[in-house]
Length: 120
Image 1 (cartoon, rainbow, N blue to C red):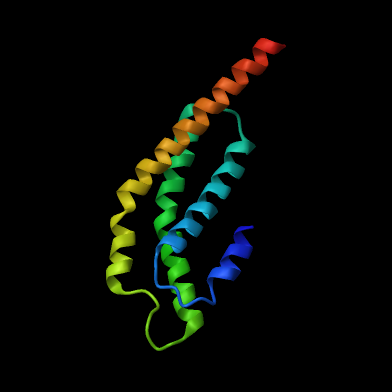
Image 2: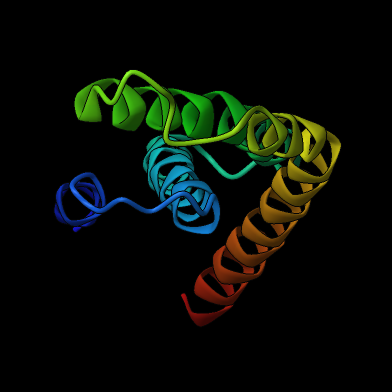
């Protein structure tokens, strides 16, 4: 689904960063969920995965912006410098969001594990 969304997004002359950040969030969330499912449920581990997920959103968004600008080859970027700076300025908020994501996942996994142990 994420690959399909990327293929739909790439050819459009869209200079808005909303869809770009949304794609970066989807990619990071998908990778985080895959990693969370691999191991045991430890809140500290889930928090770390959430923080790394939040940290990764900005670089992935910048890479997506660079790929789109490079593929279109206008001689100018699809995104203005101010938009790149706005994406970078959101970095602390994405870390906080990633930490919250990790807390939600960690608490949810702990509650699920307790419910499963009580049933057995």
